[in-house]
Length: 198
Ligand code: SF4
Ligand code: SF4
Image (cartoon, rainbow, N blue to C red; front, side, top):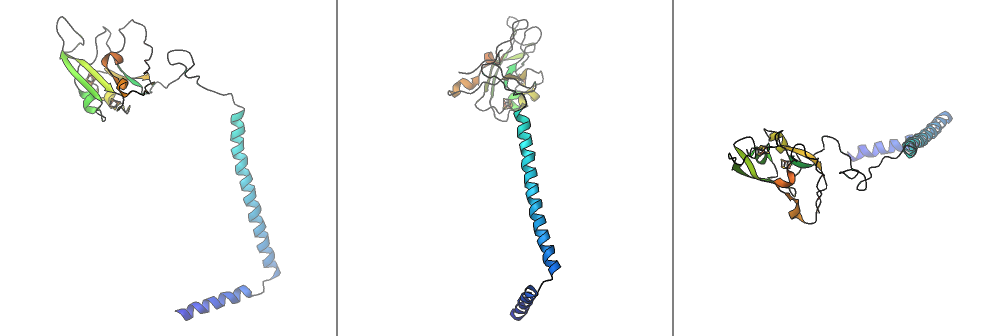
């Protein structure tokens, strides 16, 4: 095996030392120069392509959202309609709460951050149109991941995502929102300004 390797090695040395014809040397030089030139051209084209994007953007009008100094309740922030922000507990046309305290949203929540306590409607005090209503409805935004499972699970469309987004806080207890924080306004009353958390 060693002898065989040695023979191959010697033969390669002989081939390498063979005098090369003039045209072979020229061909080799030509291809070297050609490859080098093409590589430089490709690099220049790539840089030019990148810079064309840069310069194209430089001369376009700048679009910025002037948040938080913009106008309106969102203070200049803009959202897509489907944006999942802080939840809203909806009311029906009569102003009754749509939530019937069925606990399906809490069961669907993967973060276990919905706490509900149910109570019975009475003839004197009707809160929802069904038998029961949510006496307590808390969402812990320390844990909510805005997945929307609660919204999908709700059989009465009582819980939806609003556009409230200013939820950062140094005090985590302020991130536990109660029913009063989440309830939609009575029909006919002015739309609420999205609450912000201190
Ligand atoms: S959005 Fe997801 S994590 Fe947040 S309360 Fe609903 S189900 Fe739970
Ligand atoms: S919000 Fe919907 S799913 Fe959750 S308890 Fe109320 S009615 Fe049931």
